Length: 186
Ligand code: FES
Image 1: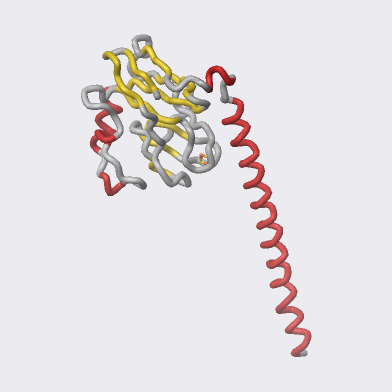
Image 2: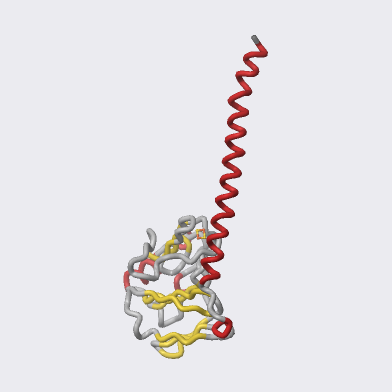
């Protein structure tokens, strides 16, 4: 009787263990799968060697209207340039730093006197996908910035991560304004 109940007790436990193991294997497989998808995405954006050799890229901002974003390539990396609306600037400035995963003021992420422009390296800080949000038809996420479809990270209009799993804000490339309508990246 006692033996029978012991068997009855262990059988479901063994099933759970097998199920957990299977789940682990599937999860590991999914993680490998995502990695395999993410890197070719970056790789497919790599320019030819002559473009890679360029240490800096000039960008004409004049055609980029308010609310629009463009993507350029600098040293093999996608660079997001967004012309922010007054509402987007305000929402980026008004957020309490305590609410941020990586607290950083908007003023530290834009150039003084040019806060309508945000310039970012367009690579998700989780596993390296290129987030959506630069095209008008793209989803921009709950905070109106960028949305990474790989695992759901969301960035605000300052490129700061507001919803993980990404642990960090989008990185800023080196760049400078050469005039009100021209920047040099690099
Ligand atoms: S790469 Fe995982 S959320 Fe962006």
